[in-house]
Length: 119
Image (cartoon, rainbow, N blue to C red; front, side, top):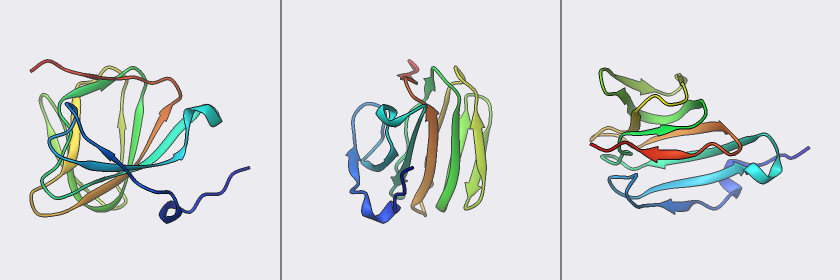
C-alpha cells in the first residue's frame, strides 16, 4: 500500500512541443509501481496542451479552477468535480482558459504513449 499527500510531491515543469507554455506535474503513482500512471497536472491561466492522442484511455478529474477539454469538433468548459473520459486514439487537447488556472488528476494505464497530432 502507498499513501501520498499531493502537496508533498514536488512539481516537475512540463514544457516542449505538447504545451503552449509551462505546466507542472506531480507524479503520484508511477508506471513502475503498477498498472496505472496517476498524476496531478497544473496549467497556469492561458496554458494548454496541443492536439494530441494517447495509445490508451485517459481519465481527467478536475480539482481546481476552470479549463477546457476539446476535440477537433467540440469543446467543453470544465470545472471542479467534472470527470472526463477520453478514449484511446481520440485527438483532443485540454488546459486552462485565459482567466483561470486549471488542475486535474490524470489517470492512464502504464505504457500509454502520448502523440502530437499534426495540425
